Amino acid sequence: MINQRDIIETIDMVEKEHFDVRTITMGLSLFSCIREDAKTTADLCYDKICKKADKIVKVAEDLGMKYGIPIINKRVSITPASLLTANFPGKEIVLAKALDKAAKTCGIDFIGGYSALVHKSMTSYEKSFIESIPEALSITERMCSSVNVGSSKSGINMDAVKMMGEIIKKSAQLTADKDGIGSAKLVVFCNAVEDNPFMAGAFNGIGEGETVVNVGVSGPGVVHHALKSLKDASIDQVAETIKKTAFKITRAGQLIATEAAKRLDAEFGIVDLSLAPTPVMGDSVAHILEEMGLESVGCHGTTAALAMLNDAVKKGGVMASSRVGGLSGAFIPVSEDIGMIRAARSGSIDLNKLEAMTSVCSVGIDMVAIPGDTPATTISGIIADECAIGMINNKTTAVRIIPVPNKTVGDEVEFGGLLGSAPIMKVSGYSCEKLINRGGRMPAPIHSNKN
Image (cartoon, rainbow, N blue to C red; front, side):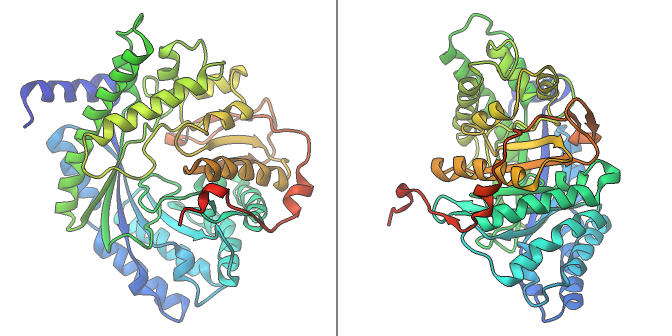
């Protein structure tokens, strides 16, 4: 039962603490659309998306008005597209254009799922699909792409890791007029999840239903505000406060998700608990960590503080929802978090510290801008490092990195909107080319043998 105090708390969270539902994402299975030729398959995919998602924007707006909670993004995720294009390798762009057109027709912000799952090996049609990604991202506006190249069960597909370094570089080069934004819409995963509502990595996994609604809540500002009254509190009191705050945030997300699913005639999937920041002041994960007692995010103690934040968010959120999933933790994208941007500019945080932090948080090296002349093999090395963290620790890790054409360390890049801005960060000048060029498959760790 929602009482008057709950209502007042929610109003305060929205008006003073930047609380919102970051996204309603409709997951769609498009297996029924597969045909022998590209055009028929693309047309059927377009028709199904438009039919199923035609009301998602209105439903989100109506629910936002009813409950007084802003719903920022309306999105769709689809069956991994490499499975849809297997019959027509070389013509994947036909589907990419149809997906982008459907997103525009429905008025949604992004459509995700131009994706491939190659964590163990790679078929010829999947290789063709991955090779299409740079062009697909350069000619579309609202489509996002992801590739899963490793898992705790199968190890790391190093051939795919090498390929993705080249794909990221080419995606940036083909969108050089927009500071390489193509690679900002591309994520490389280890242990990708099937019900992630957040872009750019969302896809509707093969174990998901026909039509599913997944919701991503977000409240860095709410958590930050709650900690301001705990100046001299012990660390366990801080953890308890974060846990209680996550419960409140998730409860609101559960309400929105349940009703959105009913109105859209879809299955309620999950609520993702992730604290997703924005470049707006008061909406920063970095500022939460600094409120705990860090002079600047990136200093010694940062990884410990982030580990506690991530754990407390999960503990509080899982009590508030019957279905928690997705990534559920704390995001640390550099360009999308005003505190992270400041820390990167000042040199308080670098790629090495970011890598350490990803061992305890959601996802990984996220929205990091690097020099445009960075070798593809160096990008592959960064991917391999993140995949190793995910594989060994049984968690999802990822890389979304932008080698900004014609820019170098000391320059800045402005992507605009939720993608924010970022300084160009330094990468190691030493080469990992020989390691990456070995190819093959890195074996899974011994603890993967659980059967």
